[in-house]
Amino acid sequence: MWRLALVILLAPAASADVSDGINRESIDVGQTIEREVGYAIGVRCDDPETVAAEMKSRTSETNVLVITGKRAGKTMCRAGTDPNRVSYVFEVTVKARRRDGRN
Image 1 (cartoon, rainbow, N blue to C red):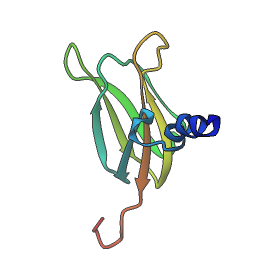
Image 2 (cartoon, rainbow, N blue to C red):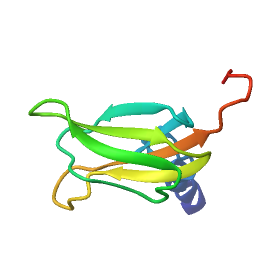
Image 3 (cartoon, helix red, strand yellow):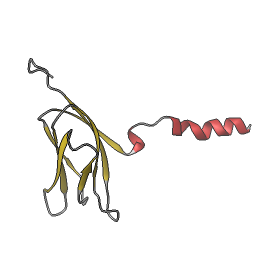
Image 4 (tube, rainbow, N blue to C red):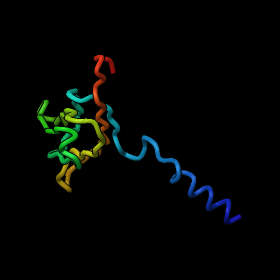
């Protein structure tokens, strides 16, 4: 009986998906995306050679994370570096552009 209870408790932990709190983005080299991040302030990315990231104020109530792909690769970015405020984690995959111009 206790084995069944253990399986039931561990099953949700084994299946990580969108509910893991990470926003996944896929962009091309040279492409820029914007994502609203509310009151988050500050941005930090693990690999600044892969993306250029900056925060901008869109309105008095909303900040925007702006990410531009610099070279092919993958990096993690956190919008919201103040530990006392909200933050968002982004996993950004930058794809190389194809030589024929298609994605």
